Amino acid sequence: MDINKLLRKNIQTLKPYSSARDEYTGEAMVFLDANENPFNQPYNRYPDPLQKVLKEKISVLKNFPPENIFLGNGSDEPIDLLIRAFCEPGIDNIVTISPTYGMYQVAAEISGVELRKVSLTTEYKLDYAAVLSATDVNTKLIFICSPNNPTGNSLEKTAMIELIKKFQGLVIVDEAYIDFAPGKSLLPEIENYPNLVILQTFSKAWGMAGIRLGMAFSSAKIIDVLNKIKYPYNLNILTQQKALELLAKKETVEKWVKLLIAEREKMAGLLKDFPFVIKVYPSDANFLLIKMFDAKGIYDYLVEKGIIVRDRSKVHLCENSLRITIGSSKENGTLLSALKNLI
Ligand SMILES: *Cc1c(COP(=O)(O)O)cnc(C)c1O
Image (cartoon, rainbow, N blue to C red; front, top):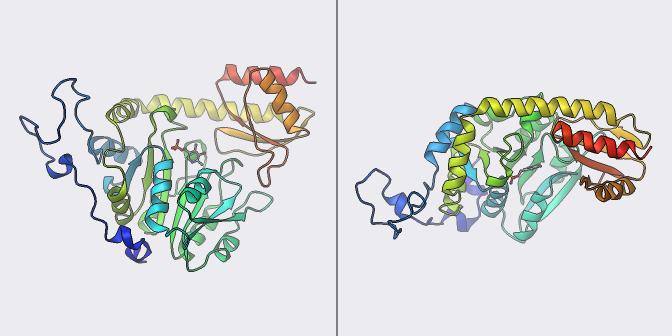
């Protein structure tokens, strides 16, 4: 596959912005090249455009080469950049599954790119043949999500691989919840499939949604494209520093994940016995999708009690379903007590 041919013409020929920090990357005694203010150190300096120190640490964590990693302002940034790099507005299209994460559609619409939705099966499984048949010569990207939001299940690896093998464009697999899943990441498959892009984030298992740090992993050619079109200083100094601090405390994060998985299983077991609950779907993520009689009524009741969950009833295949994030043991207890008062 020729990645260059998939790219929009204007991106193929784009000459990227060259910052002072791109043109001179070494150490020096005096920096007078970027019109920075000499006072208010260290915040007076522009951040490293390619985040070398942070990427090196993430490379060790993921056991994956730094030149195959892109860091962005949340995963939302690579989602948007991939669409802008590969999809010609009004001409090209994207295929995704339904239901899934809403940002693929919003980013496509902002860019004026058609988005085609292919339903999961009623068991929330990936029908890769149906996804393939929704593509045509102008389909540049396929977005899938595993574990999927809002259904919580992981998609079958064999089905994902078939899609990646057979599709002539890029397949983006969003693994935002992979740390909560028993199954393995598709990261090792990137060396086999240059059209595979994997998204992960520091927003969920790492507990850093507030600092906005997302990752894209792919073949070096695709990573180079993302680096070429991103804002030169897309990750600020504070974000990079905070991420480095938490990366040094990896064991804490592993503890959180274990705890949240145990809470998830406990909650799933208790919630399924409520008389108004029809089904608690199995989850590989940090939330549960629950089908109920009168989901809207229960949602409204919980809001009144100061407990906010997500009503997904209007979402395809999620009729009468609430999506409930797994909180601390205390928060989950508050939810359970409120629900008990309903029976
Ligand atoms: C929460 C979530 C993200 C995270 O996005 P960030 O921009 O990194 O915070 C990405 N994908 C899915 C499917 C999510 O649910």
